[in-house]
Image 1 (cartoon, one colour):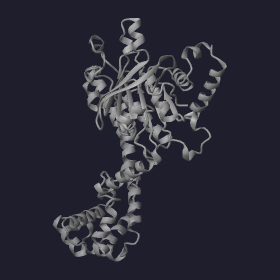
Image 2 (tube, rainbow, N blue to C red):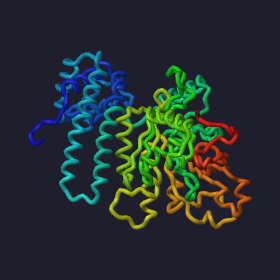
Image 3 (cartoon, rainbow, N blue to C red):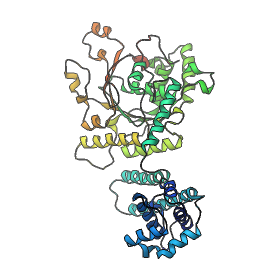
Amino acid sequence: MAGRTLPHNSEAEAAILGGIILRGDQALLDVLDIVREEDFYVPAHQAVFRAMRTLSEKREPIDTVTLEAQLRASDELKLVGGIEALTRLADRYATSRNITHHAEMVRRTATIRNLVIVTKEIAEEGMGDLESPDEFIDQAEKRILEVNERGRKTGYVSSRDLLIQVFNQISERAKRKNPITGVPTGFTQLDHMTGGLQPGDLVIIAARPSMGKTAFVLNLAQSACIMPQRFDGLPDSEKPVMHPVLFFSLEMGASQLVERVLCAEARVDAGKLRTGNYLEEEWIRMTSAASRIAQSKFYIDDQAAPSILEMRARARRFKDDKNIFPGIEGQFGMIIVDYLQLARGGKARYDSREQEISEISRGLKAMAKELRMPVLALSQLNRAVDTRADHRPQLSDLRESGAIEQDADVIMFIYRAERYAATEEEKKKVENQAEIIIGKQRNGPIGEVPLMFIKHMTRFENPAEPGFHRD
């Protein structure tokens, strides 16, 4: 790229400055949320724009006389070409009619220029010794995306704009008369306590082995992305919004997961599915369920032991590939990681496993915030919960890292008393009973949600409706 000039549009830059000299502070305000000083390529233009901002901040008028004085004070008058250059700007570009259009032109060109600079830097860094290719790829992708984000918006939002956005959301909720503001879980009391799974939240779902962690999150995925059969035949305007789901399965293969979803959706015994010993009516239910699953936006990534950097990169591509614009028409995406302790950090080595888990936890929270989707991560609990008289989990039982508790917006525990029953009689008393314990919720209440767990169908259900099912 030696000897080649970077992309720029000096005519559009000069037109902006001429328009501001003509109209003063009002024209400057029209472009401040579009372009910044560094978006100007010509150093003289940067200096003039900087002087204009300074005058505006001092509540002084913007014209050739005040600009000359300000540039002289900052020792930049010679850089811009003196009063003659300012006069030429005012005379040649004596219109502000298209100033916002010119500002958009300058911003677009600056974005392309910055992209060229960043990709050149990435290429040069790639020629050196790389300790971690995964981390290098993640940082490269992040830097490119940051250029694009800077080109689309400023780094701050005014309280006025935020209030407009908030009141629009409140108005929409009032029209829908729906208390669920995020991705619905499908469980009545859980949705009541959380308002659904909220975009930008990291939700940790933790339990001891064999409590049904994977079954529970698969049920959440079903509720989010598979259209219930009862809506068949209705026009799209009367159907609920479905949310695309990306499921990182670090433990099970993709086909095993789909088999579980099929059992739960068709309400068929998993054992029958494995042996092929099912009834004709069950086959009909399975084919119907298979059709709904096939039409859903449910995606599985079952690559073993991915790093948090790889997962973030794939999640970004998932959002772009599936054209997910969180909040538009009530749709949000959702990311599920099963489970956290099987993921890897971005470095080749760590001083401790706790340090690595902390990085993974922070990475998942960053993913949720960046993508504006709920990120659900399953987590193991330590053995301390099994040694207590009361086996209900608590926050201190989270395995390997206090960072999980700190980073999470919501922490849910799955508890089934049946697993700890000492006798058959005790087991019968609590058979199929389950609890979701909300141990932490940054923006809501904590407490217990009773559910039923139908083990042979790998599904949780609302207890108040014994015959309840999504169909």
